[in-house]
Structure formats: structure tokens, C-alpha cells
Length: 197
Image (spheres, rainbow, N blue to C red):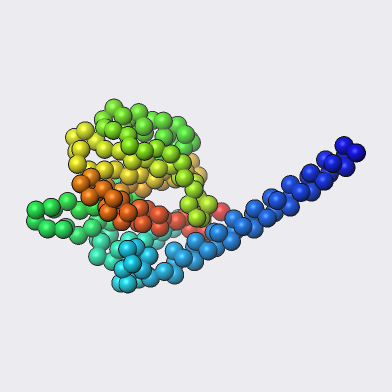
């Protein structure tokens, strides 16, 4: 009786696991198709075309067509995309950048990062997320004491003993509008399928 119940439980569990894998694969394919095919991915901008992709060997990202891409390695980054200047009174330009850092695991990296943030600023948010491509990352939002008018939003991805640190910097005074624009760029980040699996 007990053996029969155990076998039944195992069979049900296997079916559930197979169903979960199928659903996860479908979600991945759907999100990839959306990211690659949508021409107005950010802010409903109809001029958002394939020319606004930046692709490296292991990842790609999308950004607005009027933003500027810099891949020169400035400040140790893999790339920086920068918004145009709004006006002479407000010369700040929102930007998204990527740095790749060595790390044994994401947990220890987050602990060290939060200690540094709290010592030099204010931690506003810190928690784990999973995007539509089944990529787990850690979200951190904070301000720095020396630049209290700026907000730093970071996504930390852990892949093959490296931390992929995506950072968006925007002004606090227009927090909601700027955060929405920046997160659309951050959320478009994907590891290339052939490289990451």
C-alpha cells in the first residue's frame, strides 16, 4: 500500500515537473520574441528599430534611438548608453552602463555591496527578481551622500563566476518618470542563448 502510494506520488511529481519545464520554455521563447521583434519597445517610440540594439558575444541590450552608445571602456565599463541633454538649465544625462566583476557567488557580492552603500549613502531597495527569460537577478536602488539628487538603480546578474552589474543613474526629482524609462532599458538586457546554456 505504502509502496503504491509512493510510486503514485513520484509519477504525479514527474508530470508536474515536466509541465513546469514546458511552461518555462514557452515563457522564454515568448519573451525572447517580444524583445527581438518589438519595434517600439521603450516608451511607445515608433522609431525604436533594430539599430538601437547593442550586442556583445554573451549578451545584448536595447536602448532608445536618440540615446548615445559608448563602448570605449570609459570608467571600466563594457558600454554606456546616455540620454540627450534636456536643456541648459538641466544638463544631467540619464545613463545605463555595464561592468563585469569577478565573484565567487552573488550572495557575498550583495552583502559587500550593501555595506558599501550604507556607509556612503542610503539603501532604498534590495531584493531578488526573476525576469521573463528565467534569469534571476538582484535589484538594488540607492542614493549617495555626495550626490543626493541622483538615484542609482542596479541589476546584478551572476553568470560563470562573474557579476554583470547593470547600473542606471537618474535624477531624483523626476523619480517615477526616469525610473520607468531606465527600467525599460535594464529589463531589455538578455544573455545570448547559445552562450548562456
